[in-house]
Length: 346
View (cartoon, rainbow, N blue to C red):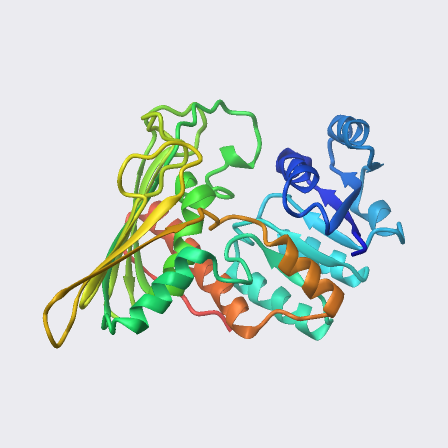
């Protein structure tokens, strides 16, 4: 298997991705060939540390014919334009959540990628459904659980952050920060489980953070099919559990539980279904250990898509855009203090 030369653009978060590329399961697929950032010190430090070629502008990086793919880890606002620039230079792209601030720009660039025969992947939603979603879908059909009713899905961490002048400090570029930065994983999974959202309502507060953006938040979702869900996200909880994300999802004849009880870091999450047979009325239970891979970069899928020239499917593009439509409505809800209808894109 021949590794592809990847350039990492945006080293604030990109350095974390480089560590994953060097140490993780993706090692057979990509060689960290180049690094790029607007901050020369970050470029120089990363180039020395990882033995990569340094670049200080996108233009100079894309002029290097040895670069085959680009990992783009710049802020989401305006990312579509950068992806357009990369695709126009004949490269495929892997990037991170949230994909963009504008769902319309996201739809346009992902549609253009198909026309240009370019691959564009991100970690959430990933092109392949992760294990938890696969089990939920399979068990919903197997046990005939009926229509979706509602759900509660949280994520909390302990971030004691200070302002640094970056995009995390900007309420326009980072709206409802705990949801935008971490709850987006849940939003993307909810779309795949319950479908499109009709209305969004937001509450948020600043409790501990020294950033000007909020650190404690809640978003309520009314889905088009009538299901109602709540997502709570917070940077304020220090309970010895790192990235705790308990989930309860209700269907007409069954309820899913995942990561509800206390766990230790590194423990596998348990997905539990408790259901009622619609005919016999007997209780049904099924349990399985699942990997917490909602935000994992699917390097193998990206490698295969690039090598085999497999373009994004329409369903994948739909999932990306639906999540961003919710984010856009969430931002309006926070600024106006109102329940907002999710807008369509053309």
